[in-house]
Length: 236
Image 1 (tube, rainbow, N blue to C red):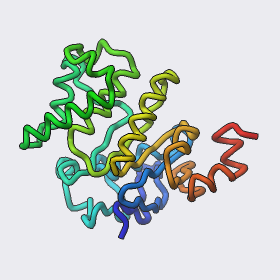
Image 2: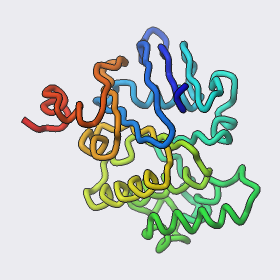
Image 3: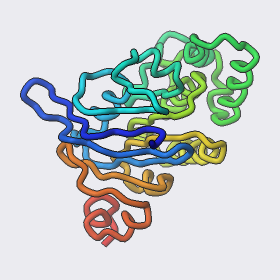
Image 4: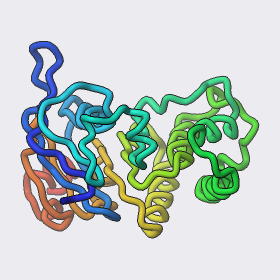
């Protein structure tokens, strides 16, 4: 069984059928990309995995049926979700926001090590330790959201649109951070409208359109696919 496995997952919002039988698997240590347009179902899929919405079908993580555990327990089991909305505490400092990510951890030495790791990963956050989150730029807030997720000590990290609306220089900083995390063996499920960014990092990908997977394969297969190149990467 794969590290994360979705089998025939459906999500309905009233009469709207948001996910229509999604099946995919993520292996331990890989970066798996999910691309597609806005409204395709990427966020709904991540919300289902995180336990935020009801679903039909099966979702298993590290041998555990996620339908049987709470969202808090999912996090404590090592599956951590960095949402598109970032969900920061706006009036808390950078440092206090990061500490909130470690609220369920008891080993304070390990927490300090991870704080140092996050500040090394994102030097901008180190420079702004005492700054309130709401006064930061969108790119800095995105770094803080990722940093706070890392403070939960994840074995697997789900990132929802981490580059949306960001300047190229900030996207490069986040790209560098993802490469470092990949080298350290962190498993990442990356949902992105920015297909070029996803293709740069993911080993395998799925393309979701209108709640269904239209294409799945390796990054090389996606690069070579004419429809993906023209519709999502802008290569003709």
